[in-house]
Amino acid sequence: MQNSIGRIEWPADSWLRKRGQVFLAWAIFNPNGPTLLSIGFVDNGEDRHVFLRSQNPFREAAYSLGTLRPDDPQQAESISSLIHATLDISPNATLDGVEPFACIPSLVSLPAGDSVRAFARDWLMSALAVRAFDWGREWYYLDKYGDDLFARAGEETREALEQWRASEPDTGATRQVVDMAVERFGKLPSFSGWQAAAWTPRAFETSGFDRWLATLNREQFYSRGFFRWAQAWVGASRFFAAGSGQAIAVRFDDLLAYLRPYGHPIWPLDWAEETIAALSGATWPWGGSPNK
Image (cartoon, rainbow, N blue to C red; front, side):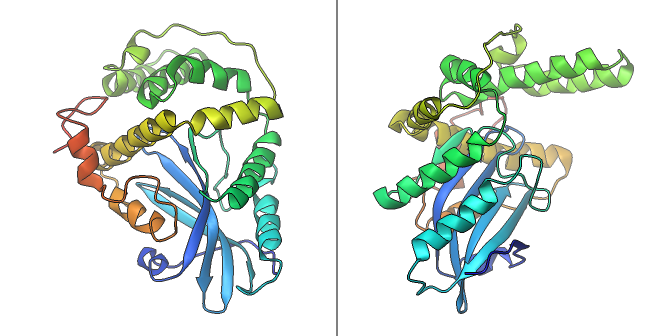
């Protein structure tokens, strides 16, 4: 086994011609561009790369965390060691600008097999334990909004906006930023009707982590949460990109095409981007037509 971190520069379609498996995926919800991070292995010639891949509609990056031989007799332990070494890095350290856990994940997708699932839980738990997140804040939002990620994003966006506005001088530029945010998110009641919230700060606890992971993996939370996350991905691709002029790096169908052969489909096998648009009905959660 060789433990070394290096960026993978393969073309996106090269991933589809290789054999591999995703062990664990976690998602960050952002209506302007949600992100999926996944970790697993991919075979390239005689080397099996353990990788971390970060994807959102506007950019993607992948890193080899180390290599081993596919016939390594200690393969499970070797892979787990490489993943731990990466995910347990200092919160101030990044992989070429990518922080695997810049915040507590919005959604988590565990592997199906019990043995790998136990490994994945340990990777996730140890990675979150070394980071100084406020779990009191997380439980405030989880208890209030559950799997309604758009409503949660409305309040969190307003919270961040109010904190930023309080720290800035009242100028035309400041008011312009506020006006843009109101135009973007004002249709969400959790944004327009915002009131400052209070919660009791909490540090990481194993029991709290187990309850959090169980909450995210309940069938209803998982399916509804990942549907809303997919809506954000497709919506960002169709609306935000058009307004900002940003090029689309990863379409939702590209994401599906990667996850399915790597044994981690998340969404039903017959779904595509147009399925998300059709199931969303006439409007998206923040307004606009999915067919534009």
